[in-house]
Amino acid sequence: MVITQKSTKKTTNEKKTSTLNLIDEKKQQQASLPVVSIIMGSDSDLDIMREASQILNDFDVQHEIKIISAHRTPALMYDFAQNAGVRGIKVIIAGAGGSAHLPGMVASLTPLPVIGVPIRSLSSINGMDSLLSIVQMPPGVPVATMAINGAKNAGIFACSILATNSKELSLKIIHYKKQMGENVMLKNEKLKDAQ
Ligand code: C2R
Image 1 (tube, rainbow, N blue to C red):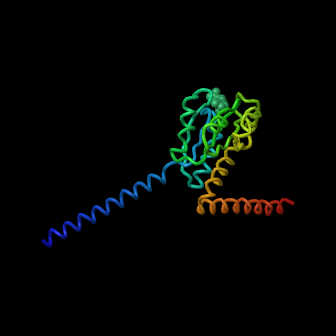
Image 2 (cartoon, rainbow, N blue to C red; image 1 turned 30 degrees about the horizontal axis):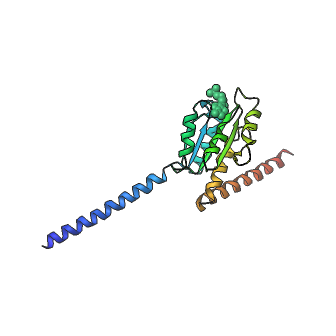
Image 3 (cartoon, protein in one colour; image 1 turned 90 degrees about the vertical axis):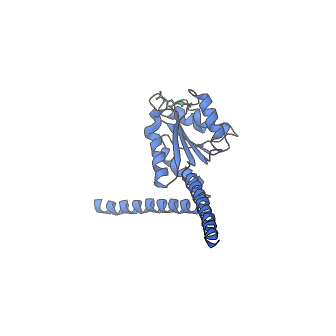
């Protein structure tokens, strides 16, 4: 009888443990899901857009990178923009060169904030065409437009948006900015030696 009770108790504990494991696994999986999506019109944009990814890595922000073109893959773009929020994406960074419709078209299809990066691609007019295509959106469909090739700032800006809901990320950004300031002071010290 006692043995039976013990074995029953063990089974219950085992069940509890396995349930806890399941919850942990779920949490773990959720933690490794991307919250930022970096998209770009072509792989030729990757050298620049990589800088956004680098910043997100530095701040431990899970992200994905995809090539999606409003002009070349309109159905894919539509599908991506409609489903990004459902997949848990919180911010979209979209880079494109030349006649850069990708960021604006994605912004028209999603309630998520879209950060646009104008790319100075080979076929563009020094990036000015990309910049104007992205920045000059019609009222009602904003795209937060960065400088030409400003993918690094896009990464930082994405972190700033996410940090409004994360004390940990907010502290990392404060630390990052403090370090930047300290680097300037170091450079000032070096300038003294050059005088
Ligand atoms: P290729 O190097 O593939 O010829 O692309 C890309 O972002 C890239 O900078 C040249 C440039 O075309 C851009 N592109 C767009 C879009 N799709 C591709 N601007 C779009 O849908 O906006």
